[in-house]
Image (cartoon, rainbow, N blue to C red):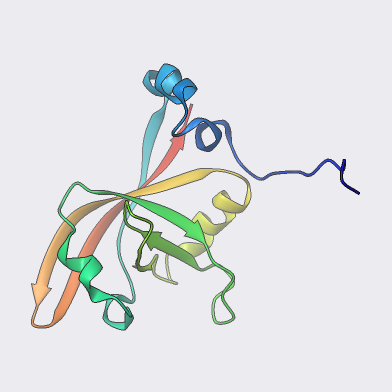
Length: 130
């Protein structure tokens, strides 16, 4: 049916981002630090140039992924929406449940360490809420 109602699993914060209403409620938004982790899978990226443009303090988006290897997979994306890697599988179950319940999570780069050809990226994970 063309006039069916559909349920969206989004919270208020994610609905107003990028909208003028978002600027009005921005002072009310809280970022609650949940956990320190790292970006997993950086050595398996198809486009490693994404790692050359990052810096400490950059905000990153988290997005659930339908993944046959990990039912709780969460992709970490840069500000251009390019894949940087994943929240490590050992850390993702609680975050996946929060996101599935409609909560908005973000990450912020806390450290970047070059170890030979490997780039280790530390992240702080935040719950964004009103």
